[in-house]
Image 1 (spheres, rainbow, N blue to C red):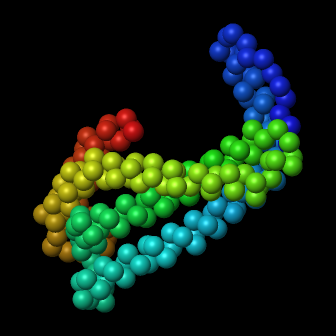
Image 2 (image 1 turned 90 degrees about the vertical axis):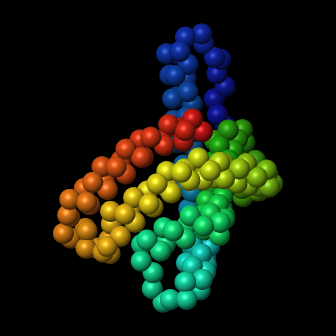
Length: 200
């Protein structure tokens, strides 16, 4: 796939037109390879993340010694060190696969020749840098967990105090006043802790 060579003009509007034209040309020429790469990574995401999530759930059931768990049990488990590690692993795996997918797609888009721009070649290039990608993604996930931990803890205490008398299905069906109070306070918590996340 050969992209047209262009010279970068001086104005932002002209630059934007060039970017759109080049991107459109690349998509028209390589959409099959892009589609194949996207399907490949979606399958990889399913194969990797589903066992991780199922293993985390089985670990939670084993630690609790019960066959079923309430929503509060799951929430408080995620606040424990083991739950935090599990979230970091799942999050790092998902973000790493997503980053590798984006690297593969970008490699396909900027390839200059069809022989060098195949899906397998681009995928090999992306996986060749997978260790660095995994390290970066793990740091991002840990930072996100660290920043959001106070908000999650506040949400857990709020849910325990306002919604701890019944199961969540009761509140969804009956919608008592404490249910709407929890939603309102939870919304304020989300807004309060969204600013640090956006800076990432």
